[in-house]
Length: 282
Image 1 (cartoon, rainbow, N blue to C red):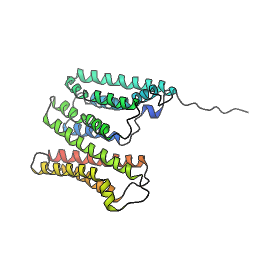
Image 2: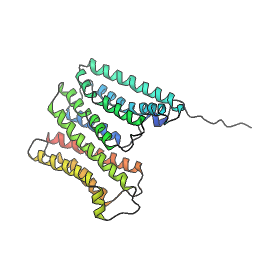
Image 3: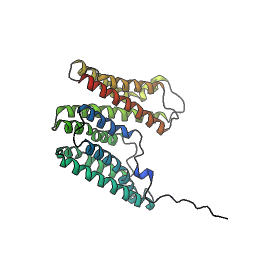
Image 4: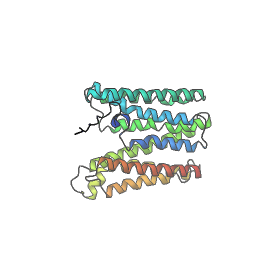
């Protein structure tokens, strides 16, 4: 009789170490990157290196976080080889992207990576002290760092620093901040056993409603005064409407995965509409 061999899991391939697990977080990088590349008006030389470098930096956080958790005794030692391997892979890809951008004459873009270093170290310090969970402040600041992909792409296409890049950065960072605050509200709704009265739902959602209303009104005023494309308020109206939808349909007993996937879908719609409005009215 033949004995069936049991497959052992690979020492190096650990999906939760090699691959980012947050579904909603992808939008905070991909959205600014897509908007910046579209707003630039062309695919410039070095754009491939920019995309690779941005993705490598985003991916690097996962294995480095796992490394810190191993040394903080929050993960078993058996995760160490995989964490070291994937951290080295992404770091080498990042170095290659930096060299590629430098050779294309876009070394000035590397200054945009400077804010990310202290923010990343701050996050790792929190991880080492078991204090990184449910930190809106960290996520909002981190989304601002990721939103720098938009001016990087615009400046790469223009070959110089422009105010348009800074405008895109602020517009997308404000949207990401509102999205994060809304996601936390949805997660809080999961704790409700039943759907409470409307007054309680409004009180619980006042912060994301204030964020999305501020963004919508601000962009609408700037659009109508011809300082921004005329229809740029439309994607912000979608996010505002989503906030109201979340008030009327609380995420009672919803899974974090379902909340994250919905956030990604709404962010994708926002990105598509933002690009459309920018290209047609900019």
